[in-house]
Amino acid sequence: MSKENPAREEIFARVRSALKPVPASPLSPLPPSARFAPRRAEALEKEIERMLREVERLSGLTRKVRGREEFAGAFGKLVKDEGVRTAVLSDHPLYREYGLKDLLQGLEVEILPPDSSRKRIAGCDLGITVADAALPETGTSLLRTTQGQPDFMSLLPRVHLVLVPPEALLADIHQAFSLAKDDRHFVLVSGCSRTADIEKVLTLGVHGPKSFHVWICS
Image 1 (cartoon, rainbow, N blue to C red):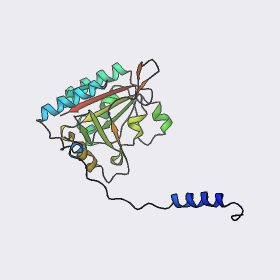
Image 2 (cartoon, rainbow, N blue to C red):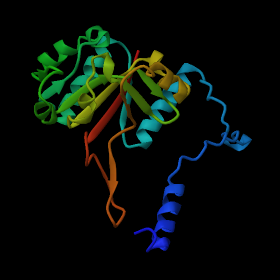
Image 3 (cartoon, rainbow, N blue to C red):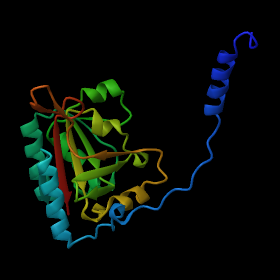
Image 4 (cartoon, rainbow, N blue to C red):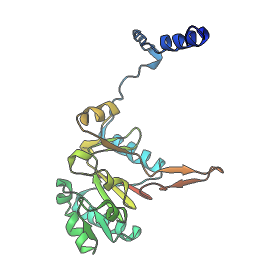
């Protein structure tokens, strides 16, 4: 066959040659314009204000809460304003510090355990998480799913509340990645999903929570 059709064999030879592995070439060094120095943190109060400002730019709702009494008042208002009847949360020292489960029970909110079925949590009103890291530059919260916070707690309920301790604020994203580098996966949250139609009408929360709250707790 090959003797009768030398053109065909020539084509196959060229294909085989093209499919051979190509020796890796050494990477060229990054040009100076592609190098960025890590961001440096400012004073804590400035970092807090920047974090809240960036979250609000992304249509999130924010506040600073200090102490158990102020937290209780703010949380009661959130439950009322958002019409919360069910909530899901894991066990975290910050929740115990603010008596969160007692607050929920006093407000007659049903508490779902984090190991509930995803279908049940998808119908839940409020998912509460604690940020393991927060990036003021972009208003982003990092949630480490290996720390007892399943990712669907921040993705499925109608309302998502992230509690951010001041010590979780980091200057630069490389610090956040270093913190979670050994985790199988983690979640970066910067607000509700954003979708626009052909007429450029923006809709929030088409996928996931429809309302996003970030509180700095100190």
